[in-house]
Image 1 (cartoon, rainbow, N blue to C red):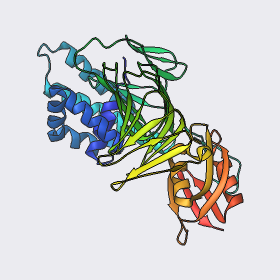
Image 2: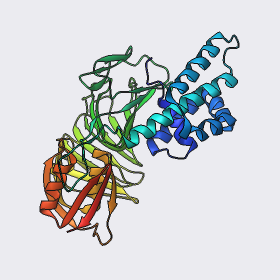
Image 3: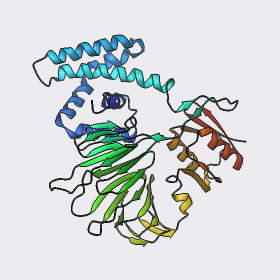
Image 4: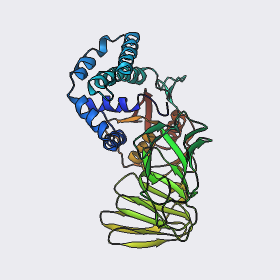
Length: 386
């Protein structure tokens, strides 16, 4: 199969118990809206009594029996001559959901691949750093898990090579643009080369929407989260990054866009860009930053080492407050933070360390430069005062 067999089933299951993240909700909506059959199946599935029946027996489920049931229903489907039959598909998907439910919670408690053993009296375990992990959603709603694809062809013009996604360089042949979306979860990152040769590094908890092939006019992409761009020069087709009501317009340059929050921060390393909102526009020179939000657009000189640290595979904190540091760790290591009472989340901390290290090493550095203590317990990070 081209995509992971249970990825949509997992998301449907989670939607039934209201556990969807923002990225998962976007993926579900994209899948539902891509085909009328998908919408019909989802609407009917929500009403089906099979959901309640399957989910109430989850604590008593036998995995082998579930597989047998799924295979049996699959054979029944093949032997049917009625084509697309919701009455057959609903229980089949429900069985699939039961299996997903089992795997999801088993993995959550036992097989979290990022959690590793550690010899420590302080931490119960350690956590691996982020790794290549993303989901590609095509224009037709088909999705591909890229975490386990090293050198594979996805479509005629799309392939994964050397742990990065590449689009074949070609000219647009007219018609309607086909948009793809790359979703990078917590604990992940990914590199992408667009059809015009532009290279994009996408940070954790981010998503980028882009056309498979750019048209003859402006090259537009949409960003949520953070990404670093090396734009291929093309004077006749400006490259525009749209993020939270801010447009970053370039011809060919290297820059970073941080759109995690309502404020969008653009940092220019090389070249020249125009940053604009509905009411304002400014030009950036190398070393400048622009920050937009709340109807304002400000410009200043950037700390390039800090703004580009993630792209250079480094944690670089220069008088950063505790909350922003913990947010970065949460995204990179896919952990949840728990603050003890009395923690001053606005307290400034300065320090740096390579990002490609286990979480415990980063915490050791932070404890050395601050008055905080950290403890890892599963995928939870506990922060206390010394």
